Amino acid sequence: MEKRFDVAVIGGGPAGLSAAWAAAKAGASVVLFEKDEAIAHSVRTSGVSWIDSMDRLGIPPHLYNPVSSYQFVSPSNEVTISGSAPKSCVLDVRATYQHLAFLAAEAGAQIMVKSNAINIARDGNRVTGVRASTPAGDLDVRCALVIDASGFSTAAGRKAGLAGEWRRYGVGAEYECYCDHVDSSMWTLMVGQQYSEAGYAWVFPLSKNRARIGVGIGRPESQADPLDRLHFILEKRLKPLDRLGRIQPVELHYGFIPNEGVRASSVSDGLLLVGDSAGQANPLVLEGIRYAIEFGRLAGDIGARSIAQGSTKESLAEYEKAWKGRVASKITSALKVQSRWIGLSDEQWDKEIEILRDMTADEFLDFIKAEFTATKMMKLALHHPKLAARQLFDMVLK
Image 1 (cartoon, rainbow, N blue to C red):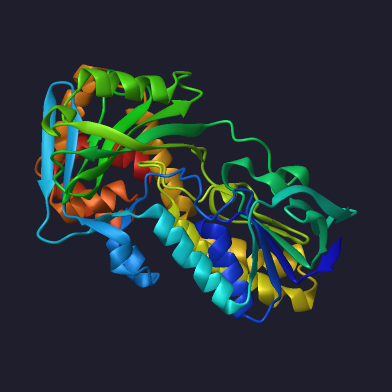
Image 2 (image 1 turned 120 degrees about the vertical axis):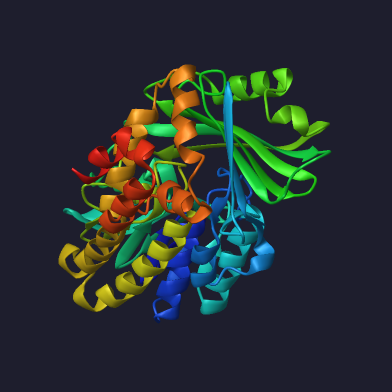
């Protein structure tokens, strides 16, 4: 079979669904290919984000659990930062993605599930279409623009020679669990060698009896299996799991996220990268759903408007300039901070989290969200000399 569309989107995550919605809303004919049997059939993210971003992006409050307190735990130390109002949140990932899918469908995008993009079509260096395996057979789509929102794999970008394999990345495993006792207003990050050799563990609440408990490990710094480490933490009931009462897993999630910074280029003739494919992720807590939705919409809108100019690299340059201007320097700064954190000893972590004790919730969130503006960092340094003494600001601002 062969069909023609203006835009073909690869990937039914938040970036792809948002791009499909925006492109269809702008008047383009759009098809989206999702390789799984359903949108969000396999959850690959813990779903932490920020309420101000969700409000700005129009994500309804019933799709997330609000969080107002933030706990850091190391082997011999513990710090809790409490805010007066919720600022962070943990998303119902499956419901959020399907909400985005219904928006795209309502705008006119055609969504094809259990449909895997197996190749791209090219005319010289220009991408001109996608071949996908679908439940109805193989389908060749001819289009002006392919939007690669395939996530970590960067399926089209790698086939087109625009992107290579990620060399640094995080791999995470988590159980979504019933727990007897969950503080639904507080999420926890656990650091130190017993939790993760090159990363962190977490407890992210969804309700008073439901939480996501997981471990993330950085590659290539460690080759440990995060699932093995997660089983160890659960078996030993390392703090704060000892406070949760009975823990019963009901879902297993497993995923990869790039941890290398932004792609050198995210556009070429007939092709655009968005979301994890482009490296749009915050390295400090390895979250990127807010970027995926925001820049997915940007990609769909600019991509649809580029069709009149042939969807050339030049006509798509506005997209790359806009998203990199918004987050590239922040992601780079966050990588510098992360490079200092990776490999700290347990004793060093005990001292490191002590510097958080006197921070306000707003100061802490600006830092962990990678909102590294010079003004905010200098203000934080003046208020918290211990943080400046750790040379974080020299690394961030030089």
